[in-house]
Length: 382
Image (cartoon, rainbow, N blue to C red; front, side, top):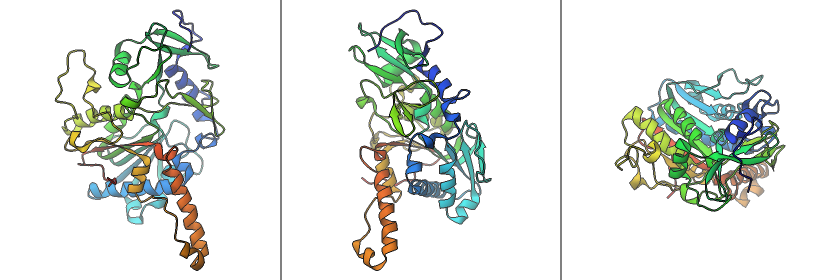
């Protein structure tokens, strides 16, 4: 719990503004020379199996698109380009020859990066292919709200040293987003992260895809299971740490992927004419546009989805298993006949197990949002 105040000074900022400067401003965390991999481990860094799975997904998108002459792969929040490099290396030669790779990142292009990779500050328009955002949305800064002793939901303000206090009540569009996606009870000290900027960022990314698939991968939660005290945290030198907006650590919160999915449906629905799930519900003059939304579940039931172009939300373990990563140990018989092959297979199985582990990377959410193709080209087990 933090103290309420009605007179913020210039030293105090909302978390969205503070994190924006700390992560992306001059000298910010994402401009540090060591890059994100120097501070935290993502699925990309855990194993090349992840890039191989994304390459297989790109091939499935290619098939769904009818093998176009130019196939786009867009890596959002590309870090130092590790995923893009891995995907290109894992593609069949015929597909790689048609693939146009784009790495989207605010930091400068790394030296020595494969010249086939375009380095961009934003995704290009008119994408035909796969837009893949691995741990991007959790670093789109958001404001944080907290209930005070009277049950009033207020903005949380923060200083550069991480000290917090309560500011003005949450009103307007932010209050509407909370009511729709993260309603807070009256108990003092309950917190929420106002995800509207992520909805807008995802909708804008989806809007760059002319035909294909947009995928967001992040730690996520759904409306019925939001954490009561939020998820704000920091990472520095491979360890979780207190979130301090001074540029020395990563600042991250989990993502309301169900809200992002709704925003993407509205954006892609306008482009393709598809009806968003829930679009038949009446909306009054004060309704939030995001009310045309899919149901609040981790895996969206097919019966509730639009007939074409509907999103799916899957846990990473389900998505990766559908893309050929299962973590099964090799047969012991291989150890006696081909010891070196057995050791390689055993190492690969260990990496696959890490990518799909419950309580770890396997708990990430995958949002698959097709544009101009009927269904996400991934066969998820029942």
